[in-house]
Image (cartoon, rainbow, N blue to C red):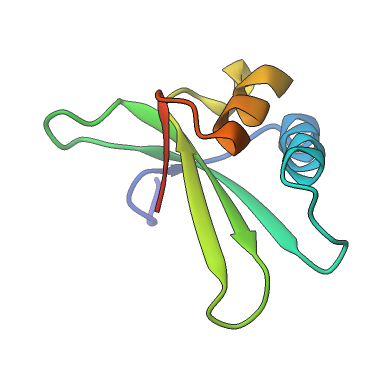
Length: 92
């Protein structure tokens, strides 16, 4: 049973790969914390599964980016494209 409304478990190794790619793609300092979360969406027009990469650079300095696919399918080029602002990704 999932009590957190759609949050899914991500393979630890894949999560670490995504964090490493994100740190390099955005040229982040070691102090910036990166969180990778996979969410299910049941609302109309929403992709069934998306991966959120949150960059936490201090109080009030959080940026979230979404890739509209499961974490297991994300590649280095997806993260690099996200950092470049390519169309199929978006930031909040």
